[in-house]
Length: 180
Image 1 (spheres, rainbow, N blue to C red):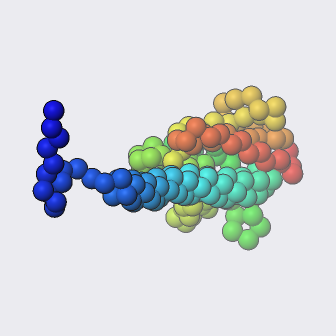
Image 2 (cartoon, rainbow, N blue to C red):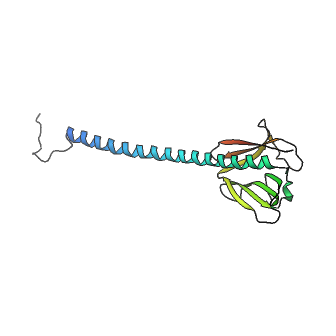
Image 3 (tube, one colour):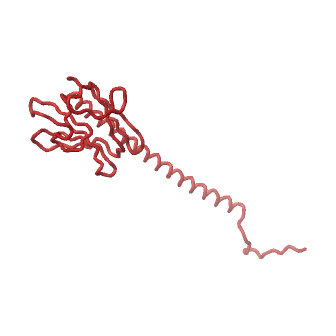
């Protein structure tokens, strides 16, 4: 049996150093790609958490102030700010007169947003978007139990607003009335 040798320069295949170098290069490239993908995913998750935190803080600030000021919960159909309010409140300000505030889940937008409408009986409503990417909105009592949102002469001292965002995260905020 004879071994046939190819003339020099016509070898078929790769040498061991060539294989090792190409494997190292492929490993470095794959490592960089995987790191970039992981970084992008973490950045998106962090951004989502920051937006949700901002939504919660903004809603908490307005709700606490509004519920503390409320003299009575407005009957939803009679509120001059608009219709479709989940939670409607009114109080009298010595300077501008009656103030109406509605918390509305605007499902006409995609995704739905929680908006606060504030108006007097005479002027146009001031609209503030409190939370974006909202899935659902409900009122709660001071024990955290879902209730129908108060209206009219409801005498609850503490009212909560429970917001569920599209990510599945739910935050519940409470406001306490100063007067009854």
